[in-house]
Image 1: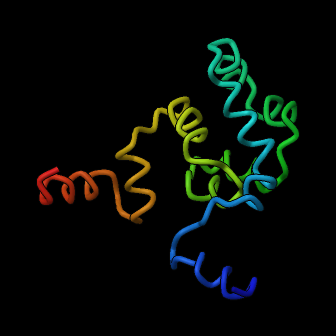
Image 2 (image 1 turned 120 degrees about the vertical axis):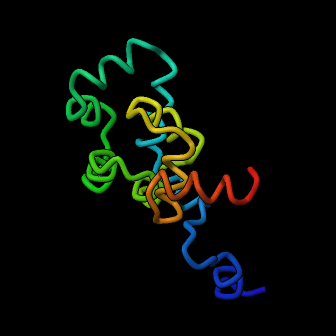
Image 3 (image 1 turned 120 degrees about the horizontal axis):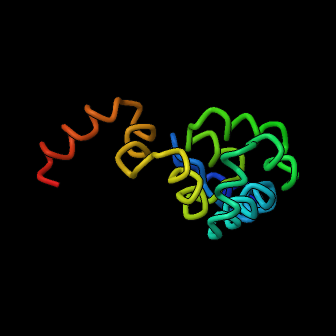
Length: 119
């Protein structure tokens, strides 16, 4: 299989594929999110987000994604969903907020979809 064929097989419209390339790009962002396992780091981030992001050497695109509170932008900037869940929790976002972002609807509309689907 050629590299071009492999790349086409990994393309899913509307989905960011977290692969080795994206993992390398997102290393700093994911490292920062991993640091949130410690309460004192979560508190430090909440006190001064900009300084905390600079401490972890986030790129400008990663900083902008974090500032936006948009999980999909953070994924596109190399964030792994597992680690980003730690950051989303700091922002007060739950899985329904994230689901709403992913589907492009309000949280209320997303909740209605879940209820309608019997979830």
